[in-house]
Image (cartoon, rainbow, N blue to C red; front, side, top):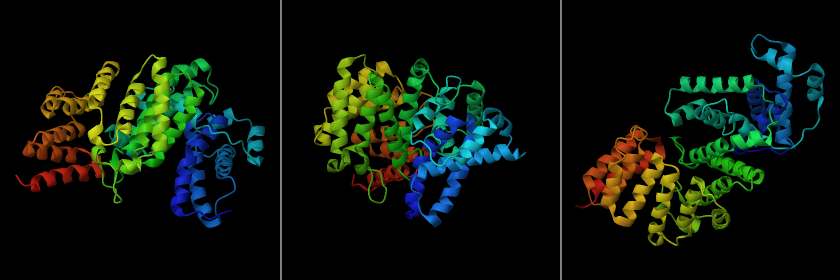
Length: 418
């Protein structure tokens, strides 16, 4: 055994948690009870590993402890465990004893299976996303509630109902047919995309990025691409993640302050990831048909291949945003397209695009419309209006790095000579 540092141990536990939950779910179909057992195993590991050091096989250790917790719950038939009756009915007594005695466990990673389970067709898209971020991404209910901009109690009820729907479905974990996987593939890619974005730019808290979350989304997308190598959108999503994740080291200062794309030190970008992403999207696009993830990956490739911000081919980016808007007409696409319009035709043209979005209810409560407007007003030389937009955007975001960045932009404009 080796003694891990507290930070290393915490990172390892976060990485292993969804894998362990997937493995326990393969044996016990009660999602909620399995999650309880895994949480107890994680707590035991946090205590014992700090004292005794890492076991030779941390994942197998966690799975074994979690399974024994499940077995203990069945044997005890405790009133505290309201789900025990279901566990007893699902797991024969002789199997419980066999699992409790098992010295080793297989090393397969069940996280992708867990992801497909979370994207059950009985769930609404919002419930599937929330459940996945909780089970696979490891986010707390509070963090997910902030991302969804709903009360924590509401989000908790949503997740509880999602777990109950999966239990009531009666579909065994890891036994989906090829047709069932195909039916859930679009939902899985969408969830992975949102999971990556939440890691790349955290919606709440003191950190700009959650590298563990974005890295896990990238890892799972690699596994998904191996499972569906001929699906163009899965390949497009993987390329998009690679090309975006490649910039992570240049996105913030040593103190965690945000650095916008046009000010980043491009020598810090991961050239290997860029090369892989460009090759992947270049091979995927000619196959057709083209979907939103592929177009976004093509846009990211143009940014990543430009030697400097000034050399970025904004005309081609604008053309791609026009295509993307036809495929996926969402508010984020419209905001990004407005920036491209401004870079090609001038800031006033971009501001005119934003005026058309002012009454979009999807943007009314967030900060991004004000942040983009402030940026374009600053480029147009309208300093006072830009300051007002930056300040209002800072008040609306729950990300501390974004708040600091927006307030700093406003302060610099205020202090600049007229």
